[in-house]
Length: 240
Image (cartoon, rainbow, N blue to C red; front, side):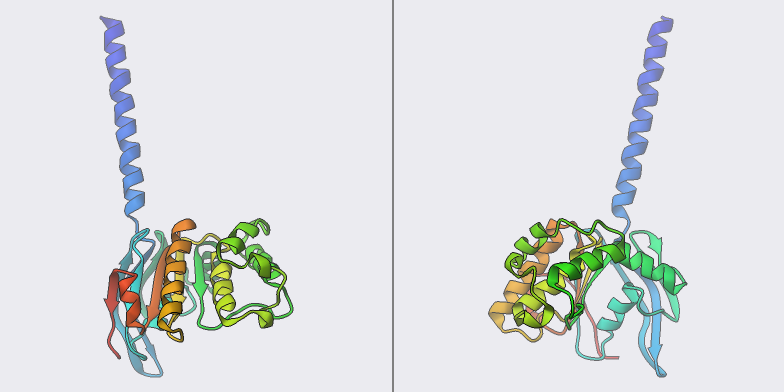
C-alpha cells in the first residue's frame, strides 16, 4: 500500500512539473519578437508617431505600408534602437529597449538584422571579409559563411569588393550582412521600391525564404504595394 502511494505521488509530481514546463514554453512562444506600446516620436516639432502600437509574433512577418512621411522608416529605426521615442515602450523578444546607447547597440548586434536602402559595407574589404567583421561585432563566430553566400547566389562573389557587385548582387549582399548574426528580428527598409516587377518578386521571395531558413521574423517598411501579395500582415500607415 505504501509503495503504491509513493508511486502515485511520484507520477503526480512528475505530471505537475511537465505541465508547468509546457506552460512556460508556451508563454515564451507567445512573447512578441517586436513589441511597441503607445510609442510617440516627433522631429523638429512635427508629430510623426502618436501612440503607435505594434506586436509582431515569431514568424509573423509584417509589412509597414505607407507613403513618404508616414513614419514607416522611423518605426524601423525605433525598433532597431537607432532612435529613442519620446514616450512609450519598445521590447525585442521580451527584452525592453535599453536607455543607454551602448546597451542598445549590444541588443541590436545580438538580435536584430537591418537591410538598409543603401549597401553599407566597408569598401576596402571583400564581401566575405565584411561578413566576418559583422560577425565579430555581433559576438558570433566569424566563419562558416560559404553556405549563406551560396544560398543567396553569392558564393562565387565572396572575394569581390562592394564596388564590384551588380545592383542585384549588392542587394543580396545586404541581406547576407543582415543575416550574419542569425537575428530574431530582420528589418528591411524599402527593399523593392526601385525594382521592376520581376526583380521585386524575386527579392520578396528571397527575403521570406532567408528569414525562414535562419529563423528570423521579417518586418518590411515600404510604399511598394506589390509586397502585399507576399506578406499578408499589413499595417497601413498614413502621412503624418
